[in-house]
Structures are given as C-alpha cells and as structure tokens.
Length: 250
Image (cartoon, rainbow, N blue to C red; front, side, top):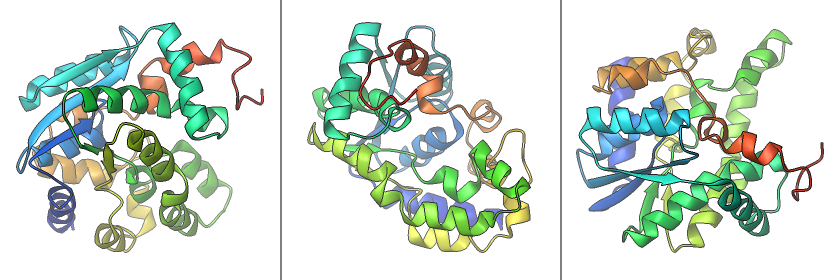
C-alpha cells in the first residue's frame, strides 16, 4: 500500500508544478512532503509566516536546512496581523476561526508575488484524506459515520478552505495549487480501511507519515505533531486579544 500511495503522492505534486514554485511552508508533515517532492521537478522557494519565535518559524528554518532549500521568513508584528485580518475578512467574510487561518497565507502570497512567483503550493486536503483533525476522533467516539464525514468534507473543499485561500492568492495574481486535493489520490486513500487511517491517534495521519518516510522526508517533519497554521504561526493568540474583530462571535 505505502509504495503505491507514495507514487500517487509524487505524481500529484509533480503534476502541479511550473518551472519555479513557492510553497506555503510550516515545517510540518504536509508542507515538507510537498517541498521534498516539488524539488524533484522545479525550482522551489519556501515561505513561512508568523510572529518572531513562533514554532512554525523555527521548524520551517530547521527543516528547510535539512532539505537544502531556500526559505523566506515573513515575520509579522501585531499591527500587521490585525491589519491583514481585516483585509482577509473583506475578501472572505467568514467567521473568525476561518479568517484567521488566511492571515499567514495573505502575507506569504504577498511576499511570493514580490519575489516573482506565480504559483503557490498549499497543503489543503491532507487533513480530510488522512484523518488529521482532533474532531474526527471525537466524531468516531460519538458513533458518527466518520468515513462519510471526511469524504463529504473533502468533496466540498472547493467551497470552503480551497475557495478562501484561492481568493486570497488571486488578490496577488498568484495561483494556489493543492496537490492533496486530487481525485486519483483520494480514490485510493478512501479505499484504505478507516481503522488503518485512524491508527496513529497521537501524531495523526499515520498513513501519510509512513508514505512521507518512504519518500525520504526528513524525520524531523515526519515525527512532528500537527499544529494548525494559525496556532503554529502564533497569530491566533495575537488576534484573540482583539475583541472587536469582524467575524468574532465570542
């Protein structure tokens, strides 16, 4: 199973490439896998965004070094984070938890455009395919049909996360591409029994971690515990202190 999955992942990434691409990079499993494979077929530049000292910045720099790829650090101060949140809300007027994840993407797309990029690889779709969210395990404990839930969430990504990220990127004339959001890859993964896809509860996405290791992804990224972009970047805590942001309902 793992060799076939690895081949599908590799093909999916390589089919999204231009001669030169940017990667939204956190140093986590998904973005490191994208970067590792993309480097086989394109000139790759990594972009990471967050506050100074954020976990994503530290991990991204470390793993970029292990990959031997150039990385651009987009350090954001409080004022820029709040201003960017308002810009993102204007483009995608969703609730707070959805808009905040777009803040680092906005900064990365802006920086990528300045450096002459036209294409940005993003890891959307991996959580749904490989059971990455904590809430999926809660659904399973509650007796819900988790397989049906993740299939539906994957199917509707174009109406949600992919739509929001693409709109942000188009604001900078950047085309966001999503190698994990691939039908052939999804058809294969959804045939893997759910009990196998949920085996690695602590780190999550165990099947993807096995494939990443098979493909030569640095062990630092393979063993890194998932941290959502807005948390790993440090942006969530900055925004949470602002009580009058549009989209907030708490």
